[in-house]
Image 1 (cartoon, helix red, strand yellow):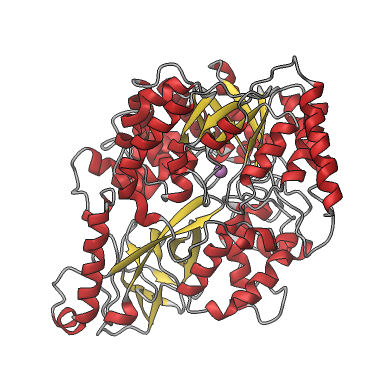
Image 2 (cartoon, helix red, strand yellow):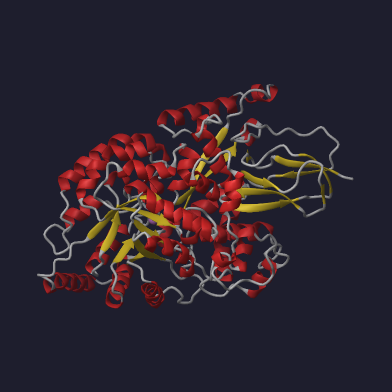
Length: 638
Ligand code: CO
């Protein structure tokens, strides 16, 4: 850009102020510290007690709303913090009486990773309303708004605010084409107005939106749309503040920020500089900067216990990849970690090259949880297992579901070749559906209610299990004292991290001791978090290379080479959690029969028998974590 241009642009901005001297239009601000803020930079480990500590002061600021639930919080709380997610809303509501609560809802995916049946969606949204959520920001990974229908019905019935979000994504720069342009977003916004949303959010979950794109998009929306427009972006690329500022100049109604201790990096622009920058303008927030500073000081006191979640391997707080490749930053780190676990990091460049093709084959869908994982993991499979490009020799269950239409309508049609291959022998049928996915899903609650009747004490409990069948049940056992909470599940403090480090070091240096005494508690676990579009995945790997031991995280079960008359073993190709065994000891299996379903990086992998025979032994059970190479079952040839 020439220097001249700067001058012209600056003039235009000043004129904008001058043109509207009387039309005060204060910018409204939603605070994200209690949800996306700690989700983005502290792996969603924020504890309710640290929110309560500043809750009353936060209520005084005058925020439009506080986003404090949804996204990954539900998962992280019951899985890692041993906290009841429902209780957080009720607890904070006691201290925050004035400011509305908002949550991020993944449409028919709720706060999970697949489409749930309508009865689960209805019950979940109703309980969210009952417990105190006032504003629902609803999005769908495919921007297929039919996936809003069921949630919307309940939100309206309860007279709560229904915000429709449009996932912001870019046209794959290496594939050409103009799929995601302003017309696309205007069309989507028109669809949302048609549905009757109370406001529209541009949800830039990966922090891709550039300042002038934000300006042009928001201006176009303001000219064409009646309901308030809200912008959600991330700081990730370093453009976050600039984009918010241009959006403000374009007339945006509401923006998302964090309190400074929760801001920047992969989180969001901080509120404090914006408040000062807008002082005296027609977009003045009216916030008391001293109050904000007091709250930030209080927040800083609880930050040290989360600090170890920050990526401190690099000094820079911005992610250059997002600027260079416009690929969500988290997606790259996810691929890196996935390949590392498969000892194939040297294939990263290939994966990166193959990615645009796979995305195009799968209907050029937006990349956001869960579609970023679907596209990412399929790409890794193609690179590692295909003999020639385009084979799709190992198609994931999620890609099959996507092809069948279970996630909704893709932006562009899926490649017929992939479609045919994916649906060959697919359990639900070989002809994809065209209706709203919820229409074909059988009610799930009655079965779950029956299944957990001895464990769940109310609907909230049942819903935890409906969303997270394995970890949900485990949480309820902790909650009602039926099972001891493992040490590594308590919220991690700096002391915990130090202790873990010590254990790992000890395990590595004392490998002989460990090998000689199988009874000793295996604890050489490394757990790390992988970010994808501001969501995180916790991956646990056993330090098998250094210790010569392979350890499973939650059960402490040890892998041993079997000294039995077996002719085949099924081993875990990647670390993950056993979701279910489809076969039991004594069952006869044929080559290719699915024996076990393993969840890794939030994707389900059906693992099949490598040979025919009789299942001799199954060393793990549902809920167990397994390391790469762990033997999942022994098969004796008949
Ligand atoms: Co976000």
